[in-house]
Length: 172
Image 1 (tube, rainbow, N blue to C red):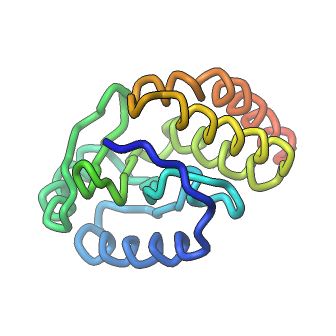
Image 2: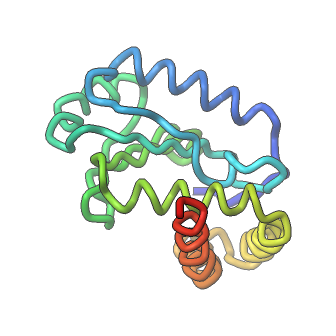
């Protein structure tokens, strides 16, 4: 997979909405809601041009029954793909365009993804730091996705923890 971090594209939210409609047309019975997550969901943040979607499902058993319907949209289902309690799908092969991360209602993965997205949206200084880091890592990782992810990992872990605290404080 080519690792290319590009400037924010204001068409990304529209691309998300279009794909959301397509997914709901095939599997609405298995979906509580679909969120736009990841860097393409944060205005102004550079990103790999891949639309990340977070699906909340009533249960993974129900969701699994709709895997073939989702795959009919061009997705490849990869099971948990290293994260227990998740269902991961990708679309576009080596030129990936979309990714689905599905979790059952109540799974901490839902809260974690949304908290990080919302934290970046609300903290422009952190967002700029993340933007700079992603660009730097993309330039130096030699097209190695594992190296790219590892280069961002410490930042993500730190700010994901801060994001979860921030969300908890906002709710109290």
